[in-house]
Image 1 (cartoon, helix red, strand yellow):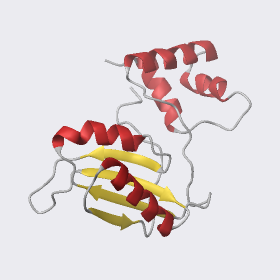
Image 2 (tube, rainbow, N blue to C red):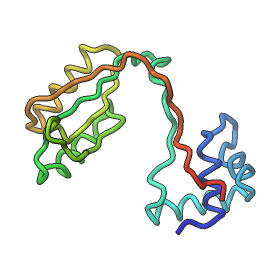
Image 3 (tube, one colour):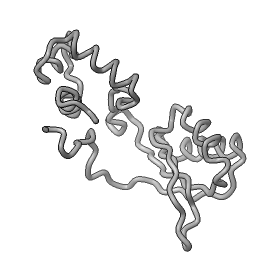
Length: 158
């Protein structure tokens, strides 16, 4: 169970890291604690496995990465960990996850790739497939983005 002061940290982080000389001091103030306590609690949350990492979100289109491909593969259950671990190391990959297949859609492994153009996305997907010995894939390119923001957790204000 996460403590109330840790929820305040989650809420402070959910709005993003401020661009300031001491961003953690600003976040700590927002969470109602000192910077040292804030950093200490972050470290503790990481040790507990509650917090995986703190990172910046690149607005990829503004940075020139206009091709975004969702690739779907069929990966045998016994290879999911191996394949997921390998692909999650790819710099061009922002999301990598498995889902239960359904009868008319047997694909169970999904990867979101980002590159400057579709040709590069295809090259990266082809290399991943070769390196991980994956078969046929379905590739879907983003056409329009309606929403992109940090996760807001229901009940975080408690």
